[in-house]
Image (cartoon, rainbow, N blue to C red; front, side, top):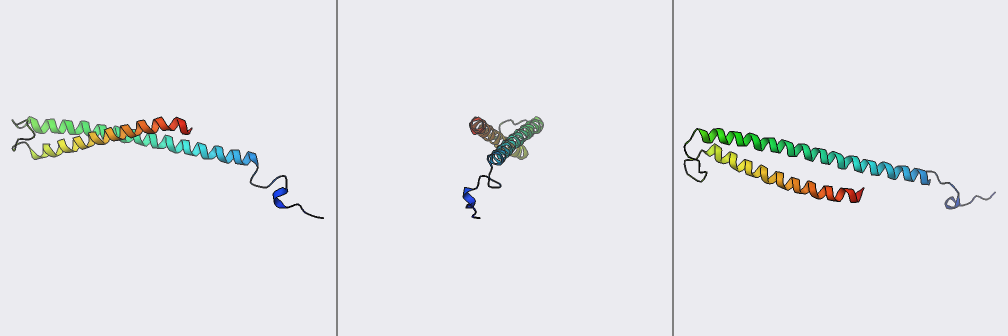
Length: 113
């Protein structure tokens, strides 16, 4: 009794086309789930940052209402208001960058699927 080499046997365990397709499908679904999760996290982060900007706007308004000087470059402008304005501007820049990144990832996502 001669045995055929393993590579010439009809069915090799673990490498059947059905198993390979199932494995590929599960990898694809896992990748799509990960992309969907990243998108949800990005949207939540953008909402949180937008809320922080709104709160900073309200705080800046409250601080500047109590003083007569409205010009941020004036030496008597409240330091806390200057700090909040800088933070608000940084948050707005972050929101713009994340929004741009999200748009790019949305454009690339259908091509990957």
